[in-house]
Amino acid sequence: MHTIIEPFRIKMTEALPITTRDQREAWLASAHNNVFLLNAEDITIDLLTDSGTGAMSARQWAAMMLGDESYAGSISWHRFENTVREITGFKHIFPVHQGRAAERILAVTRLKSGAIVPNNSHFDTTRANIEYAGAQAVDLLTLEGQDIYSSRPFKGNMDIVKLAHLIETKGPKNVPFCMITVTNNACGGQPVAMENIKAVKEILKKYHIPLVIDGCRFAENSYFVKEYEPGFSGRSLLEIAQEMFALADAATMSAKKDGLANIGGFFGCHDDEWAEDFRNMLILTEGFPTYGGLAGRDLEAIAVGLKEALEYEYQRYRHATVEYMAGRLIARGIPIVRPAGGHAVFIDAAAFCPCDYPGIGLVNALYLEGGIRAVELGSVMFGRRLLGTTPDEIAAPRELIRLAFPRRVYTQSHFDYVIEVLDVVWRQRDAIPAYAITKQAPFLRHFTAHFARGESRKASFS
Ligand code: F0G
Image 1: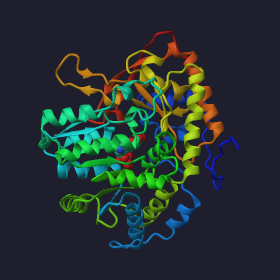
Image 2: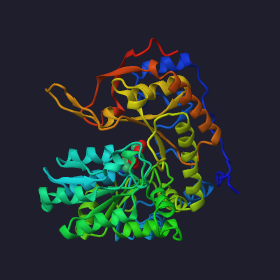
Image 3: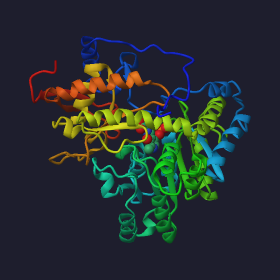
Image 4: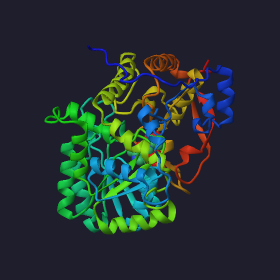
């Protein structure tokens, strides 16, 4: 059969709010034109993130009932630890309440002021935690990865020539570790080839620099490796994931993505000293090392979810849904990042509606037109503020918006609706107004910023 179906059926439903344009205008205005500040009950299709928004399986819900809530050494912890160890092979494994907790503890325990951390592309929380520790987060994406419209596979790869150059010029002592993010969220959910991770590891080995994998979407990356990288078609997703983690000295993980859970994460490493420092800080800020800020039932849900994310039929269906939408948007001439990423469709907002903060303009237009919530990944999220200078901001290299696909949540008709809304907004794109920031936090400003609506290139957006 050619039709790829959802490899599950629906056992429980949740009503979606159907709202009017007038209501949405009022709600967005009272949210200061920032969709992060909207109430979820005022959103029809929520594509803000694929993080913690997935639907759990009956097996996960059943496992939750077995949650052992003992403070120390619970049965659920052992199930969690065994599963994470089977996939990653790490000697030391620590649960955390979500990915950024692992990033924060890694940063405060291993980084000093002036240190440099390379990555293919740092995601916002990773960058913020590294910078908060006084270190510098450097993105080393390949030229191909920076080209929005190149259809080459594995555009999430790290530029290994740039990596070697950075280490040589800055000195290996100033690089306490190097990260690689799979899949590469900030550059369009693009995958990283196993060959690239091996090449990165080879360079790092020469300088005794540890490799830390940000494995949030490790199962989606494994699917891309199986489908598109020569030599992997006969391997299971689990085997591919195992091979990848075997190259790493440590990993940070948000189980809210490929853990198919609504909360959770972990840190894993081999080094005893790293583990000791991590454990001490974990106890101080997250919890005892066998629960790390999670309930026993969460550990159970993650243990099952990590394995479900590695089921081939699930990944095949998930990838087909992203490709379905990407293909239809390309056919309408809508400028999207190519090829389709693992967890989302990314739109080139600068090409869609060239105006100030085009990503905010487009995100808000999608909400006003159809009650859809997307997220900006452009100058609001990644731009650099320079206090006391003119101009007072360096724009991000790209102005993207992301329509992230929650796992196992929306059906094909929901995506048909999103395509229709995008089609309308695309045809009326000249009416999308510019936005200005009127209030912002010193870091991670996109979550709480206020925006004022400016002029559109064409009268009003009807
Ligand atoms: N690393 C990557 C690549 C991520 O995408 C995220 C989260 C994190 C780390 C942090 O994990 O949220 O559990 O603390 N990304 C979400 C997103 C928020 O919408 O892409 P967390």
